[in-house]
Length: 158
Image (cartoon, rainbow, N blue to C red; front, side, top):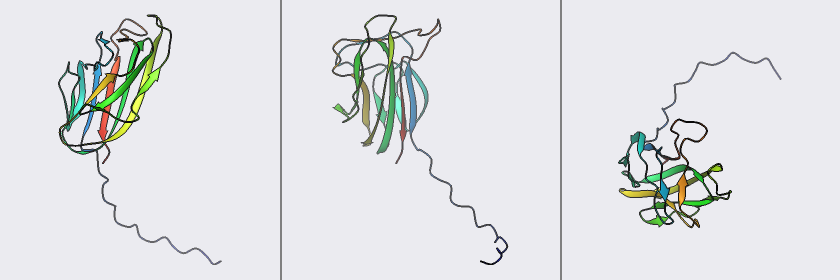
């Protein structure tokens, strides 16, 4: 093999990648007991773009059709099962559960993540689905300050 030649000139810069056109961070810090079959209310909004939510409501409205990723967490006492519903129908594969002792000193975090296709105007809710008891959200976990005890992050991926 011969001697390596000199390096060529640098090529043109490529096109900028696409950014998500819709995303949201929605959370709750207040005390809440969610009945079996009931929806979680979220009392606070972080940044919202292309997704609508009124603080205190359980309903999240997706304003642009597309493929979305939704991640949720619920900090609660007791065992529970939580699902994502889209326009009244449970999203397949979105039910996650945890089993733990039912005492105020045992707080568990139930995490879930799902990818789904949504039409313009679709509504998403987080629901206590198939738990044996109401879900009691934990407040002040780990100290005396308010903590997020339920939250959702959504972003459009396509």
